[in-house]
Amino acid sequence: MNSGGRFAFLLLLAVLTACERANPELTLARTEEDPATTIAAAVVKAMAANGLAITVEETVIQRTDILDGLRSGALDLAIIEEPDRPMPGLVTIAPLYPGVLHVLHNRPDASDFATLLRGATVYAGPAGGAAQRLLAELARDFNVSDDEYRVLDNPWTESASVFFIIGGLLSESSIAQFPGYELFSFGRADDPPGSSIADGIVLKHHHLRPFVLPEGVYHTLTDEPVVTLSIRTVLAAREDFDQQLAYDIASTLFHQSQEISETYPLVTRELDERLNAIDFMLPLHEGTRRYLDRDAPGFIERYVDVLALYFTIIITVLSGAIALYRHRKQVRKDRVDEYYTQLLDIRERMRDAGARSKCFEEVLAVQREVLELLVEERIAADASLLAFVNLSNQMLGELASDHRTGNP
Image (cartoon, rainbow, N blue to C red; front, side):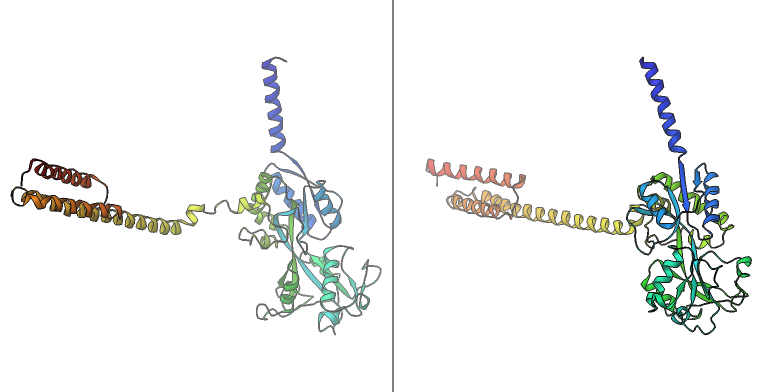
């Protein structure tokens, strides 16, 4: 292949590689709990509008299989409830919606959660699902043993006295299937913040949050607000998921949160850029963090006041140091000037022939004093000192010649 053909081949390879990166084929899985299927379709639609193709797995996959699929790379993305503990290697691309716990029962004498469970037949969704896991956790918290209640595999073959459901808001058709049932509340809506049973549960289980179903949401199930729990549902991926893809997905979802909320109104409760980035069991992907921090001020902008203060202090200290140096330098020069003046006085007296004999010792004495000051660094070795030395040596030379010639 000649050089021209080789260049064309490399150019074609680069173009094909760029196209592949620009339009990756991603797979998305979701759990069985509603409204995961509806939200998955809304996510796919939002991504498609921005040129990103996502294929939803046609079959509903169990949660454990989804986690294994993400870790192995068989799946790129998944809509799952937040786990009750961190899972190394998995991260959150974006929060999607809260899965709300509905506890429906036909046991009017159930004054608390433990009484509600004891002796009850409970349907809590598919085996291994979020609702069954939470039911087991709460039963342990309220000291209800496994043999004090019975979990049903199918609510249609045997009637359940308690339904334990995590998912979206109940539709009118769903509510119609629960005649004679009412909603259990983990407290009162007017309880002081942090004082309800739901707040106590959240202290033990960090993946849960209190959730209030306002009065009027379900007319036939309750005539007052209901305090319950919720679990955040997120779009999850592997930690090594491409940063730019994560950025683009997060950007699309946050920008189209209103459109996605048309399929499920609680989306806007989670898909909000004002979220607390550390409040996630699966930490936010670095690409998502980049998107959320895109308008954040840079280092200099954030710390401009502190930097200005430090700069002012540094300038003040330097100015003080320079002023002190100049002052000390001037003091040293002034000392030399004083001794230089003494030499000039002695030189004047040297004109008197009778006084010249004493001048030699005086000049030597002045030189010794200056030398001692120089050793002690109290005067500077500069031009003033050089002038002093030259003048004193000149005077000593003149006075020494008097002694050699015998002049008085």
